[in-house]
Image 1 (cartoon, helix red, strand yellow):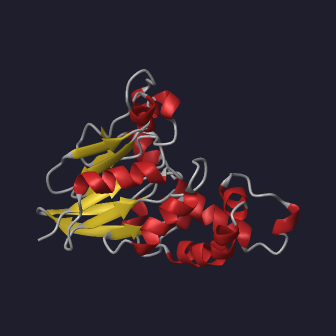
Image 2 (cartoon, rainbow, N blue to C red):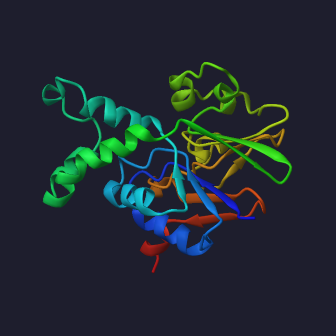
Length: 227
């Protein structure tokens, strides 16, 4: 029986993703879930996408940034409106990456909005921002990608374990003076794994949680700067 690992909001920090994968060393039966927002802000969106596309252990979900990129790229008038983050400019600056843009877009279009994982006697609900829609027959995409009301209420869903990203945990804790950490809500039914990987100046790190053991893994760009 393999283990399940969850992380989110890598935002182009491919070096941190590689570090986490080196730490957990996923085996053939292990599954690594990325809860969206693999692109934008950070320096290497292509590196993150390439790993997500080619690593057999990784299951990536869609975040609001992937959704926004696809929507912009496929808009008939996109040339009139520059993309509002750095991913497109980074990809276009390299000839090989520029040619891969349609491949990246096709990949992002196929990303599921949510996932269910049954392990350890629990049913885990995974989504970028909110898991409440997973239990509805008609799932509203915008809520899965954007809704922060679960974090605002600091309550999970009775009978389920929910894991989300989208909101950097240093915003929930209200401090940027210490390394960000995975946040567990008071009722124990909601976990936020977005530790603000790209926001190094705010103590941001890439966090990863093992669902079976509860062990937490962290990688930070600040670690390299301190060497």
